Length: 129
Image 1 (cartoon, helix red, strand yellow):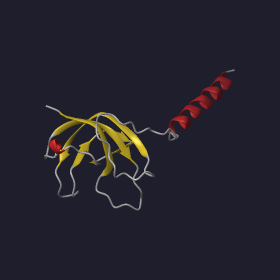
Image 2: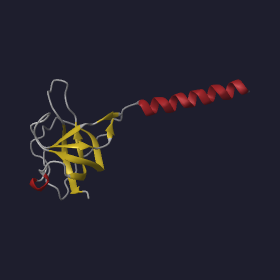
Image 3: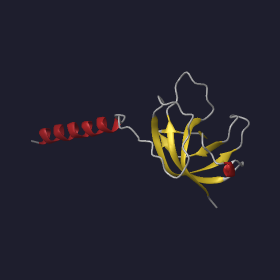
Image 4: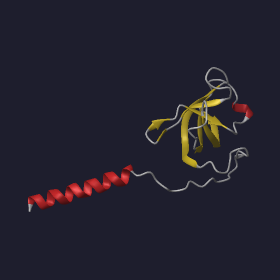
């Protein structure tokens, strides 16, 4: 009796671990809101994550990247996303070290690309104080 319970619990725990380890095939839909979406993202690029109300700060071009980037945001697939390259950053946010809260879509990148930041499309952004 005890051995049977142990086997059932072990099997259930294994199933839960395997289900949690599987990557989701769920497609994230790009939704047009009040914020202008990017026109220059290739249609074959998939959205791999959606960030909501993430905190970060703006970094001016130079050093690592020749474009304005956002440092911060949540981990994606258990890895820290170091820099985001928003393709639709409003002019009023193009200043170094502005603390921001932002939402948007993280797009896939390919192994053949040499990029300094992850492709990102903002759906909202505001200054933090």
